[in-house]
Length: 170
Image 1: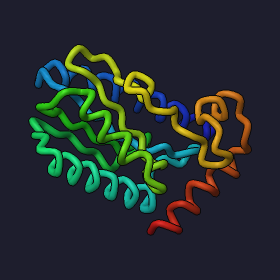
Image 2: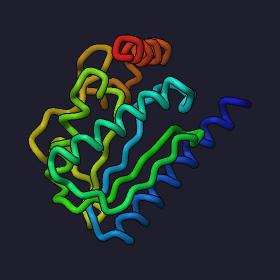
Image 3: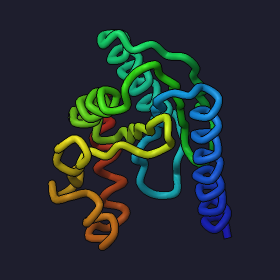
C-alpha cells in the first residue's frame, strides 16, 4: 500500500510540474529550464538527493552567468515528495540553453541531472534536435531510454549506481 501512495505522489508531481512549466512560459514569454534529478526507485527526496540537487542548481546558475543568460523568473522547491524541482525562465534562445544543459548533464555526476529546456512555444528541445547523442545508461553505457523501457537492469542495481555516483562525487 505504501508503494501505491508513493507512485500516486510521483505521478501527481509530474502533472503539477507540467502545469508549472506551462504557467511559467505563458507568464514570462520565455525559454524555460525545468530541472529535476534522474532518481531511480520510489525514494525521490532525502538529504543526499537534496545535496545533489543543490549542486545542480549551483552549476546551472554558474553556467547561465558564464554565458550571460539572464534569469527572468525562477521557482525552486526542495521538499516535494516527487523530488526537488526548479524552473528558470530565461531571456535566451532555447537552443543555446539546451547546449549549456547538455554540457552540464554530460559530466560524471551530471548524469544524475535531468535538465529539460522548453521553447517559448512550450516545445521541448531535445539532444537529437541539436545533433547530440542520446543520454547513456549509467550502468552499461547503452542508450538510457532503451535500458529504461526494457527494464534491462534491476532496480536495485540502478539505485546502487546512483548512490555510488553520489559517494564518488560528494
